[in-house]
Amino acid sequence: MLLPSNGPYIHSLNIIRMTDRNLQFLQRQTSPSTGLSYLTNATIPQPSIQQISLFIPGFGCPATDYIPLITHLHTPDHALSAGHVYVVVDLPGHGQSPNSILPTPETGGINELLVQLHAELLSTHLPSSSPSSNQSPIPTTLYGHSMGTLTVLDLFAHTLTTAPSPLKVTGIILLDGPYAGTTPPTPFDLTTLATYAEHYRSTMPDRIAQCFGPHTSPETVATVQETYSRLDFAYLIRMSHYYGTVDGRVAQILHALNRHNDQLVATGEDPVRLLDVQSQEGDFENERKSLRKGDVTAHAAFVREKLDGRWLREYVVEGTGHFPHLDDVEEVGGVIRGFLTEELV
Image 1: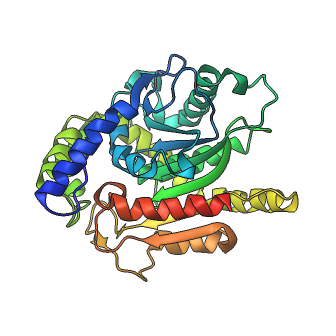
Image 2: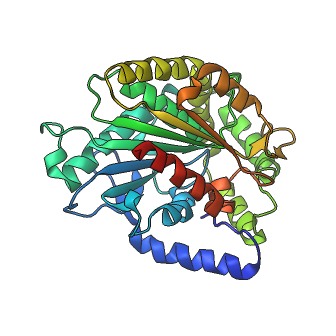
Image 3: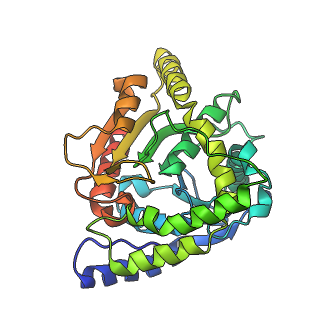
């Protein structure tokens, strides 16, 4: 599990205690219909669901990465917390979700699993919100970190193919997405996959080390490196092959978001807004660098070019690593609160 550190050792201890305490706030569940393992604060029965936040971690990352951010966002006396259900998913082959629930990740299939999980949550925790009811869809905000930014963009595009979609996306939050529509699909050849995976495993310590920043504690570094050492890289490479193809469609997805929002605005509805949080630039094979205020990454320039500025919000976390939702949780949490509050106005 990744844990943030913004300063002295005592601060790290406070974060650890906070995280342990909120493992009771967020309960581990396994979806009967999909096999996905996830964390949620939903109870049975849930008194009401006013808002759903669906969190997707990055390549190789577990759902527990998001616990500090959710802890910061959820306070009982805050308007955003009333009726707010958080769902943090371990993707197949990540955390506690097994590979077997998605045997061929290179062909996709995660969208269908996430939509099914969303429907299952509503029917289980709030039966009146089942698809057969006439209740309006529950507003849902999608969060994605790193490769997870492609997951949530692909999921949003998937919801546009189902009319009306039971998953109503009202906001998208991207956390240090490194993609700019130019990533070639990961080489995929079953005959050489095992060899390539072992090579990839041998380079992973150096790759992941570039993602840490000055706010990352030595304890976190050791834990993350150990977590990555146990991953099934052959499986994850197959999954990343699919998301390489998604990167090639991001321009198309952002244009679809523009068209969708134009239709919403024309009918008097609120548009789907996107918050793009950036903290590092560079690929994972060469040098990565922290950002300063005013820096514009290739990713940010790409998103600015493709997405109408009316529904784009941007924020740069200065002088940190690739995990701003962990290492800079108070700063990032405050930005997200402001973004979500703006949505309610």
